[in-house]
Length: 199
Image (tube, rainbow, N blue to C red; front, side, top):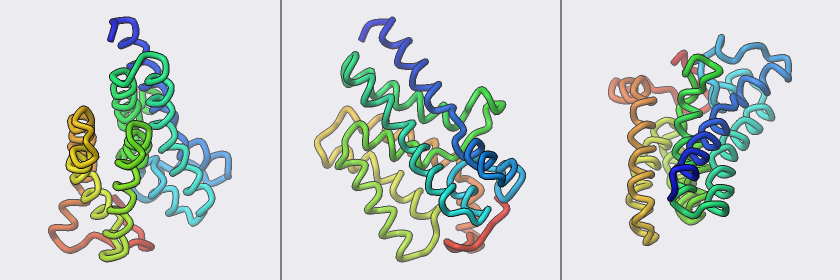
């Protein structure tokens, strides 16, 4: 991949990832600043705490799409390496958006979008694992952490060795962004799906 292609991939991916859909949709729906309620996070889980399921669903879909779109566009323009780089840039753009003082979301929805863009079986596998864990334990964070940690294994199983590293990077970042959730899981204090939490 040439240097100009790398720069375009990084910039385009990052800028796509920085769009704070949760914040924008919540304001447009008259729900106020999503950062002032619940965990203060701009992601779909915190938007759901407003009680508006439609806005939460829109946030979830758009946060995923801002991971998928850079992967698809950049892969078409410059090849798969640019798609991977752009996807990672979008993921970290969501985590660290320049417009919000580099304080963004936890990255789960955007990582799903990136995985779908890179390999739809890998993205589908993530959703299946998330769904099974959520159904069994009723904890969104545990489901997300499990699916994320297993995503590099999924990349290997679908014979996409080039995706093991990006899947591992995103999984590691998601573990870090969920460190407060992990502490509550260890203490047995993590709330079930449908119940609110302040962090």
